[in-house]
Image (cartoon, rainbow, N blue to C red; front, top):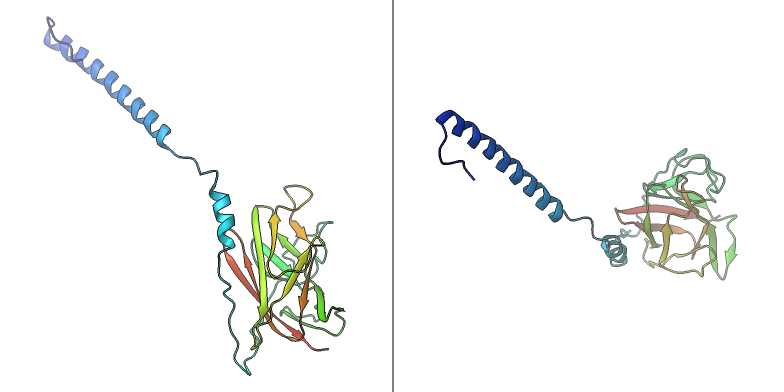
Length: 218
């Protein structure tokens, strides 16, 4: 309320200025309170919705025509730190953060995603190759793994982890490590029908990554 009534011009001016400052402060406080109340925190169902959405992502693997070379991925060494619960740390790791896989049967010194089937065991008519998986400590959420041959037959790859039965869609959950500061790790196997060019699609909450490898007849 502005001061009125009997007062000198100077006194009224000073009094009104004080009142206006009080009103301004009250308005600012009210606006701040309203904004704080209207600021919405992330929906607790956001991760759940995102988790369900990766199941709906289509398989985006390329098609190879007859005679086309296999466009194999190139991996890196030294990506995964030395941690006692992780198998195959010195291996070449393929993919990009937050998830990587290794082709444990790869023996050549190069970094290309290629390996021979000569020593890979055969089970139920398919080659059973060890494919360890890791994810960075900061990633928390589902990982969906699918794959198939990129040639004319397009046969699906089968995956298993933690002694699960072989399946075309392997879904694992991070974190999976002894402590939050360590990388997640899964001992996994992959069933391949034979030699050929294959693609693996890796879906996470943040991205879709594709790794292409070639299995060579031994």
